[in-house]
Length: 153
Figure 1 (cartoon, rainbow, N blue to C red):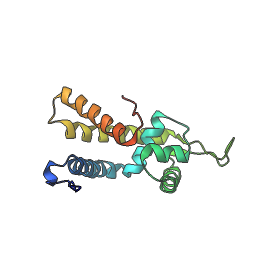
Figure 2 (spheres, rainbow, N blue to C red; figure 1 turned 60 degrees about the horizontal axis):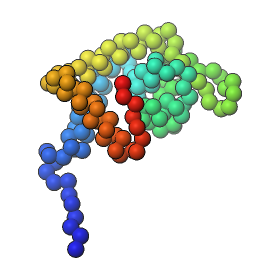
Figure 3 (cartoon, rainbow, N blue to C red; figure 1 turned 180 degrees about the horizontal axis):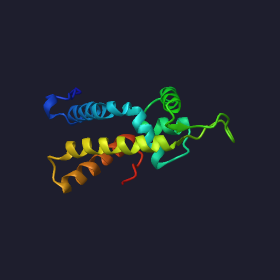
């Protein structure tokens, strides 16, 4: 006879606690990004482009955990506001490489500082060694579920 396992007490569930932390983080990021007139996906897009300019819509979607269709909307909004630039026609293939504008880099600096402050607040109850351990453990969890190695910072 097969015995079914259950999650059990939600307060003892790592997955449930992880989701609570992710929701709290998202809410805090929404709060600090709102005055900058950015959503979390828009900020994520700017942050990724700041570190890896020239990515295509599909590459940005993968890097920011949204669909390609959603990324198309994010990019249109950012482009209309003068935060990113994309060529009208691809120089080769179909991909349109995206880059930050001067205004986009300025907005990214402010947004990145605001999000970094949220992350510092989130981690403030942990000693520095435990913060690194948490990061390493989350990377290990991701690798265990995806089978793909996550680059360490």
